[in-house]
Length: 436
Image 1 (cartoon, rainbow, N blue to C red):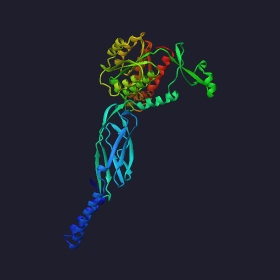
Image 2 (image 1 turned 90 degrees about the vertical axis):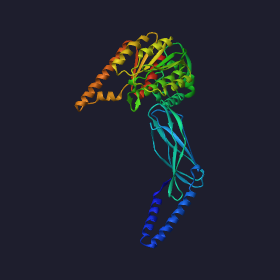
Image 3 (image 1 turned 30 degrees about the vertical axis):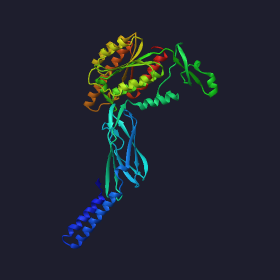
Image 4 (image 1 turned 45 degrees about the vertical axis):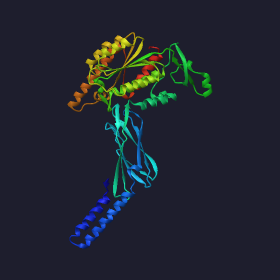
């Protein structure tokens, strides 16, 4: 219970009257009367103010929250008393979350329910726990505030950004791929089968136009074809120290996992089998090849809590696992960072060895801060040093890309926010040309 300013002022006035009573008995008489009146009013206020047992609160949110996204949390409140209340509600989200507002104030009429909502933005993947719900409300005569705490411990998982994946799924169902940035490549070989109809795109082969559907709808309709043969896609994710670098408050590893999940979903939709190897100096997790959307959930559960490790990635150990487990020709998609030339020498040595049996694809993410430093006009000596170092790092990285490409390795270097689309487009391009 917290006294309000109104009650404190009344107590002070009563105390002053009693103090003056030592000088004038007249004031003592009124001081005693005012104290008795105040006690009576306070007792009446206490009895008329709803008890905590008459107020209930229940929190609800997605059990699986999305990293770096605004996740809505709702608190359902119920006032079972016969008195309208003004509630101040404070939740206890994990301290690692950014919260849109610390306290929510709302009016709750007698015998009614209401819902308070706010958003949280998790900064890191993993397991977290919400605490209790704290509520304050004014007494009937506004002499004190009553406090209550409702036990509402709740465990949640913070996954990679599932909201982006859900957005893609919705647009894909509506045949609005261009809004996601994805392209449908034309298939050039004869080993294909009819899959579906869709709107004609400017780069479609005119021979794919379905004239009956075009006449029926009044707009050009193309036939979508799918390759008959199911192919193998192996996703490899470097969890070493270079992937702990942050870009816009997210690890490079987080961007890599988001891209891997998007790729895994599209592969499963296309009927391909997907496998996973996450590695640092050891193999962190391994998931054998499987098809179907359940495989995506297995990959998600395996990846959501893996942090970047402060160790060098052991490419040799990871690629030996590939050679021992995957004998059929596969697309090997490696998400890594190539800013460290010494570490990259190992990758340059081992990744081309997968050829010609497998098709290796290396995915890296541009460092926008580094690019900004390299392109900036220096004003001071320190700026000149920074620009020189940034230029040198980018030149070394480009040299690594050139070495990989000369050895037959495909390379995609994209901004982190575009990495998912760039990766999936490269996969669709390869699949469309039957290069897998």
